Image (cartoon, rainbow, N blue to C red; front, top):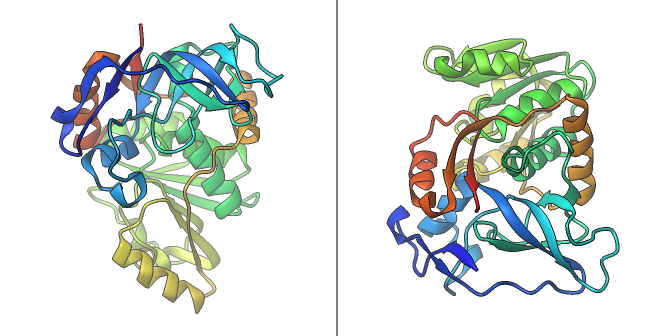
Length: 314
């Protein structure tokens, strides 16, 4: 199969497009003919070696966390899917999606919503699952809560704004650049703060939940903006901020939670229902053909991308 791969950690230039072995599905897995994938910040962090303690030193590696395509084969224990089904989801681990074929856990995949194209579906899994688990599970969002989404126009943030409203938030504030303010409002934000001019950490005791989708703030910086029993949730804080925040959170009624999204098919199925009903919509910033993944990585690394970068696979 054709795939994007790299044989050493480094800048986007280490990415190659060429032949790699087609994976074989295990008993509980499905093999998917990929029609579209995506680029998430975790992909270029893996490529750059920022997560090498997790990803190790074996090569080649195929990046990518989001898959949308058709089932090519199923493992012997899989009964829910059949060849030809339109599915989407995430591979286990931290890569494998930027290729013509990818293996997904049968229990973690979901049927694609009928109304979505492959490109739209590829913009969903990691971003939407991260937003859902961050708000509902770690943030324990309650009906009527005042919620702030930092990085509201990004791949996770665009889903977080919509999901906060779907989960019953009383007020959703999005933090983004002024260029993306109208987009964030269109997703349901009640308030939009220009991060160049407005500092949400100075809004004393305003929020029940702060979801830092881009890890650009910290618990200690954000604590004053939380109300009593408020929650600060993030996915990838600076290690120094993380250690100090966890310690400070222990002795406060304002709590900090950090997490890595779990690959759960039940959550993706719930997200699918919202997408089909029109309560959620994926936002695509730009599409690239798979051979141009290096350019897509450079765009993602530059920041300020509104929504998701999608890769099309012929």
